[in-house]
Image (cartoon, rainbow over all chains, first blue to last red; front, side):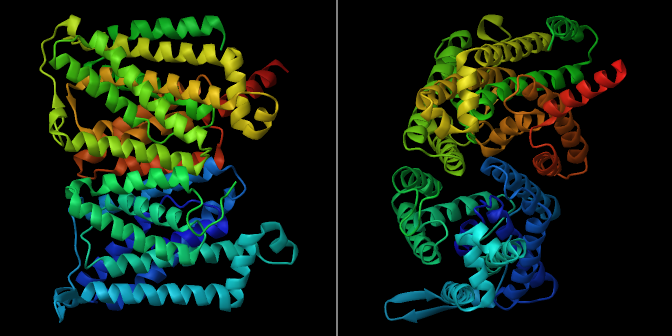
Length: 268
Length: 319
């Protein structure tokens, strides 16, 4: 999930405050597909990714594109507006009750020696790795990926050599959103969700991305592992309701001492 | 605005409760209250351009302080300033960390959000301050305890709050500090190069703003008689505080007031209208759409736009 955010931020220097809410929409789509068409989320996640790709493309083309050169503050406010709309549209459409997608996989566990391995989590983890690899291949081995990196590296330079930067941005935003859509569908059987989940998801992904370093794929992946381990440890030693306290404190410490993250360059 | 027009507007607002019904009075109280918060935010978010997204924390601290002191027999008339002082202390901590470590733009937003959320989580987990249920204040109706049977008293207090914050903003705007703050917003590096002590002025703006916001907490606590962590520390309140000056025109004297006059009735009416049909959250969709529209079409807010329109109109009518 954070991989998507880092892509959007790294390429366009646009902070996607609507990230968590997009993910929640991915979850609800998986929910609709599961209850309406009987599709298992592990099968349906490409559909969610495609839908979110379209949403991301639309947000980029319709809104962000108009103010890409505006001050950072304006972009933040714009995305806060988008986040408000997405979150509350979900609230109006699905109600405030927590939802959860049932998947037969989610009930299976494997016994490996003394350990119990949750199959659903294992599959989610495996698909996440495959997706990150696929994204890496896309960015570093395809023409479009090269253009995205070019536009991220040097906006004017890319313009000069004839790159359609606007189109590249739209694709990057779409792919970033598609990642969240897929991530949302994949965790929907594991994680109960409701419209307000979006905010805490956004915070978690900001945590991950900032720790890993803005715009670095590897960083986002390692950051993701670090933050989840830290949060689980925090939940073991503290009350579960204090788990978030841990992530926010972590966020403050990282912001103050390592704002560029472990693998990123600091933005000015 | 011309002094005559200001006086007429104030006289009008002073006379208004005589003709208002109970419900309209409540809406006006909310308009003034949110305009006050917007004006306080405007000092640091508008003039200085430091986007704080955690101002709810100051309301919460102010409210909780006054309520807890009240339980121990200290009148809210004193608790109000203690709450403001504590909020200012938190503002100073956030400001010090944020400005000393050079967090700008998005990083500063995240820092303020993180602090506000930590306050919320702490307040809802500490049983001594009511935990997740929050605090309830017993109604006595004693004016010495900041409790009034007549809503009109709250109306005048809210009006006084709004006017005083606007007065503070006007004072800041006319003095050297206002010019420095605007310079910091427009180009921090350049103003520093010209010898402006940017750290000092940003800190001043932050402390002043958080103090005023903290005072508002007392008003909130003793008007609603209840404090819930999610309501007073939560991100939704921070959004309410930010959105009014942005839509009205941040960094202008009248923008926050205009923003509150536009948004508060809109929010209240749509909340009531959609709430009846069970569509909670619909008014927040309206907020989101408005925010997007303002960013795209009126990035400076409604007030500068209206002023331009007005100038154009007067010039045309003279010709």
